[in-house]
Image (cartoon, rainbow, N blue to C red; front, side, top):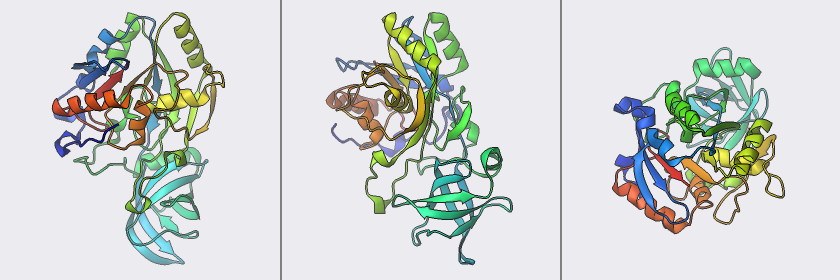
Length: 343
């Protein structure tokens, strides 16, 4: 795909609701994956592009507040009194991979962080160039509850304000675990989901906890295959996929996370499988999709691995032309932005 430039004014800095727009009234670009034909609408009219017998697969992972601030010490000596730590990936009940945001000093095993009087963490090992493993003093639900009470959502430079965590959730989010919102589903309202079900569109669920999309200058371009994410595909979702195929319907993933979960769990012959585990699956134009027919997603930045995944659905040249049209028409990018449907 040719490179493109997203003007700064097209970076969605605030949730639609804070811009006076209902979450399901954001703009929607519908792209025919075979011809490249484009149509423009609003997301609440998604029912006009789906048919009875189609299946939507949603990611039920719930966004957690993943930014902690605290005191960083080495051998009892304070290195920083207000360091920012971003959780990247949950390893077990008490350990996380994390990014310590520091321009000068690298964390080393034995370093400690005090976030609150009840919550501390120790560096147990270095992992990838920018990430370390932290062992926390709390575990399980106690750790999760403490994060909800004291941490903040991850906020990138294009976000204008420290919006509350509720703005970073889909309406159907259930299991806490994503450090960044599975944002493709954000535009769904319960009204739209009920309308689609009345129309005969099936709804099924998977779970994939998103990791941290980090990029530091010293890392250049991190290898997406270093990004392991935990997923679960339940049997009832597999049964819904099988029935949809029998009925001639389409399996439409809501988000690149759902594509990764379903394709990671697929069997060797391409049949949909139930299962759970960790995936680092890299999907691009060379990847034959086994399970998913269509995709609902936001708009992705140039050179992003998510954008490469889209090229598994549609010729990169056609995708580039559609993105150029989206830019010309003022579509908004990122988690609070507008929607792209590829079918």
